[in-house]
Length: 528
Image 1: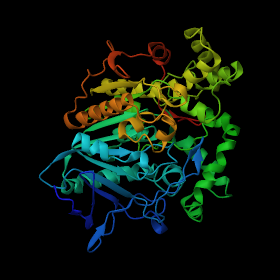
Image 2: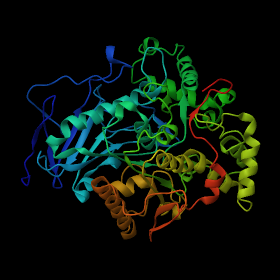
Image 3: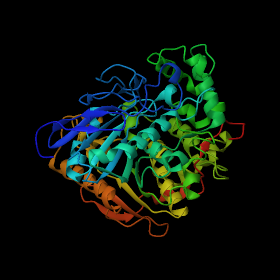
Image 4: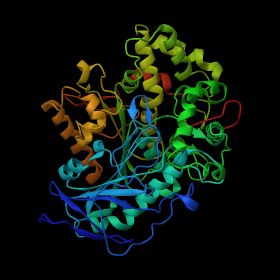
């Protein structure tokens, strides 16, 4: 398609009309499932009702209900209101069924309680245009609506929404110029945790052949732990953790109930362990059905051996959260000790599949001793940041790659080491920096903070182009341009001003965690 005119594509549910933007046909707000309200509230996503005529796909769909913010990140979004949360957006060079271009499907992060595919930071035009491929972004339910483990509802409704969106891609993307046989899912933070979950979910098998997981978060909940957390959330509203009770609360008011628990989570440390220190009450639930096992166990058993995988993290993952919490330059030795005891790999934590971080509150001293011995010259702030980065993002990401290899698959590992330029580089290569680099959205969302007062330098633009090139070449060919990871040489692509392939750069941390079994976090004192 070369004209400036809008194009019309017929999906299985009805026709949609695009806008033409920067040489692309862009479709926004296409429903892939019925609005999950009324009798569909807390249910698995239902097929969308067909419509007559041609629907203008000019505006993003409404964001799913979500909390007002998380450690300084706003959840307020300039977007339409309404109940039609479950929508997809498509950027395509040419909606010609004969084009058969590779397809990339983006899953946003936000601690499983924030996010919207219409956020300006996820504008996918540069990925689609530079890579000459089709990009899809999607909405999924968040917080209580999407992830609370409540009676009378399936677990992991947010993940089921993602599967429904991927089924929409399989059934419809050819009409947009995409190849349903060449689909890559990619996501960051909770989006990467979602990608990891999809790799382990039987219902997602065959819906994609490649995957990119950027900063995989470690916490996954056992069914017992998730139910206990859901009971505490419902109690904030004087309700039981059931679909019937929670349905009595308007979807737009329900996030405030989950948000109210945040400041009180430390009170549950004796039952929730490490989770009580995160102020994040939502994660995928290993319920035995929707998500039969945690991703590390599933991949090690071969669940995704036929899926080509990139997985990695940033060098200074936790620096962003420390900055947002006003902690930079303030950490005392007492705070470092507490963090090491809560988040460090203590004795007994690697004793079996499904055993997770924080499962043995008496083991914290071992984690502290191990870190202090491994990093004898580190300051309290360095120890505090290092153990958070390792426990929550770096080691879960690395171990996902190792699990994929152990299950007979292939994985490529990377680290982003280039420092965000704002504030004189004080934020380092922090969590989320890969998003504005990948999308080229330096003046939106996190990009506003990470490039504040500096903007996109030629160096930043060069690295941004490099990121997009690697991701889109991988989506096209399955080869990102550096060797697959193995447990002897451990080749890792380090993205920096001068990018290079090196042995995995955090060998000391890797050895500290090599016997830890990431898995579903248990309700302390009860079986997982």
